[in-house]
Every structure is written in C-alpha cells, then in structure tokens.
Length: 214
View (cartoon, helix red, strand yellow):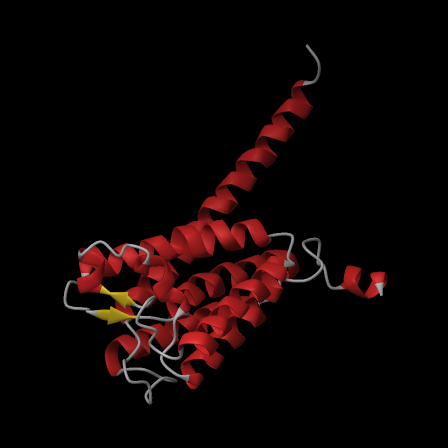
C-alpha cells in the first residue's frame, strides 16, 4: 500500500487531501443549503452593507447540480496533478490559487464590474489552477501536451469572450468572462513568479558553490 501511495506522489503529497477537502466543502454547502445559497453567494448589495465574507464564500456556492459537478470534478482532477507535483503542492494551491487568486477575482468583480449583482462558483479559480497545473506538468515532464492544454484554455476563453459559453449554456447565469480572464491572468503571474524565484535560487546556489569558502 505504501509503495502505491509513493508512486502517486510525484514528489509532493501522496494524495491531494487539500483539493479533496475543498471539493468536499462545496459539496457540503450544496447538500445543506442547496443551489444559490443566500447566506454565502456573492451578492453585491449585501457586500456593500458589510457582509464581506461573501467575497470568499461565493466561490464555493453553485447554481445547480450541473454547475457543482463540473467544477468539483475539475477541482479534483487538476488538484490531483498540481498538489502532488514537485512544481506545485498543497501550499501553493491554497495560498496561490484560492487565497491570492480568489481575492483578486472577487475584488476585480467588486471594484471593476459594479453591474454584476450576483456571482458564484469555482470556475474562475479553476482557470488559475488550470494554468499553473499545465505549466507545472510541462516543467515536470517536458511533454508538449500540457502546452497544448494551455493553448486550448486560451482558445476557449477567447471564443467565449466573443460568442458566449461553450459548456454552460443551460445555467441560469452565464459564466463571467471578466472573472475567468482574471483567473487566467492570476495563474500566469503565479507561474511566472514561481519560475523567477526558482531561477534566482538556482543562480544563487551556483554562485555560492563557485565562490567556495572564504
């Protein structure tokens, strides 16, 4: 059993416990409160009246079973790859994708789009997670398939910007393109900053090694 778990680790956590916990949180909210949960959804008017927690909890609320299962399924699949990768991990998943990117998405909605009254779902954060996962897996394997996946995300988002949703036509509220674009931008910035940090540390180690003891 230990060898099986080790083979799944890719150098990171043996299993994506954080991703599973975050998925479970969305499932639990839906099971208890149903779709469009009034206590947690992003509601601009209520946020302006002081219910600031909605900026965070709105990401975990979903409209219906279709919306929920699409997002939770994507979270588990991408979370497994990223959380167990040596170029990802649980800490980067939580702090980068959910805390930093989730905050940027919420504030982009609140400050940049006053016309949006309601919003919910993980899809914008999942765009961040998709970007960092594709880049992490490319760095780990150097397989071009991950870059193709990244290109498909860009193509899908561009199409939806011009013509509307590809997968979510039946939802009561259409996907918010601005939130999705913010998620993609956040993922790009996270991957770029991580690369620069690793590059700096590598160059620093090389310099120290070349300098030798004084």
